[in-house]
Image (cartoon, protein in one colour):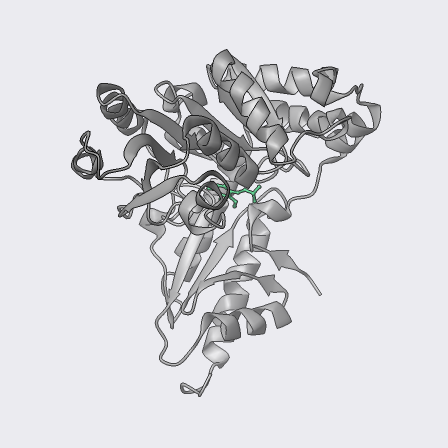
Length: 352
Ligand SMILES: Cc1ncc(COP(=O)(O)O)c(C=O)c1O
C-alpha cells in the first residue's frame, strides 16, 4: 500500500548525502570540546543566526530545558504562551528540574503574545512575587497553525524584555520555516533574542539534534546545564555531520513543503465533515477540525491509516498534517482524495 506519512516532520529520514557525511565524519570527545565536526556545526549554526556561539544538543526539548535552566534560577518566573511547546509538551521540565515558575499568557491565533499582556504580566519588586526573568516565544508556532512570527513582532518583544531587564528565549524549532515563509534571514528573527534553539531533525531531515545559539558567555553556562541533564555526548560528530548537511542543503527546499501544505489545505476546504483554513497555512503545518457530529479524531485517523494516509490526532476532534521532505505534490493530492473518500464513506454519526 502507498503510505503517506503526514504525522510530523520529525519522521524524516536522513538523506543519502547525510548518511555519507555521517560515515566519513571526523570525531573526537565533544565533552572535552574536541569533536571537530560538532565544533563546525556549532559555529555554522551560530553564524546563521547571528550569534557568537552554539551548542549541539540531542533534542528540541533538551535545547529549551537547557536554555530555561541557564536563564532562570529556582523561583524565577518565565512568561510563555499557553499553547507553546515548552509549556504544553515538555513535561514542565524547567519546573520539575529547575524550580522555574511558568506563567502562561494566551497565544493569539497567529502564535504571538499580546504585547500589552506581556508588559502587564511582568512582576513589580514585591516580597510576595516571584521575580520575572524570561519571556519565551515560539517561531514558527506549532500549535498555532505553524504561524511564522515576523521580525517586527520579535523585535517589539525584545524591546519590552530589554526595558524590563528580562531575557528573551526563542524556541525556533522551525525557525528556518519561518524565515523561508517570510522571505527574511533567520538572523533577522532572533536579533533581540538572548538564546535561540532550532531543530535539525524536523523539516531539515537530520536524524538527531538541535542547536542552542547565544552569546559566548551564555553558551558556556548552557554547556554546564547540558551536562547536568546528561546531555554531554562524546563522538557526536557522527550525528553532527548530518546536521551540517541539513543546514547547508535542506533549508532552501522548505518552500516546497509550505506549498504542499497550502495545497493540502486548499484540497480539503470543501471536504464534508472537516473545517480547514488555507489562509492560516503559512508553513508546513495544517490543522483540521472535525465538524461531523460524533466523529472523533482517533477514529478518523485509524480509518485513514487503513488507507495509507497517516495524520496525527492533536485533540479529540482535531487532526494535524505536516508536510515534509518525503512528501511530494502528488502525495498531497492523493492524501486529500483519500481523506475525502473516507469522510464520504462515514455513515450517519455513530457512537464512536
Ligand atoms: C516548537 C517545538 N519546540 C520544541 C520541540 C521539541 O523537539 P524534540 O521533539 O526534538 O524534543 C518541538 C517538537 O515537535 C516543537 O514543535
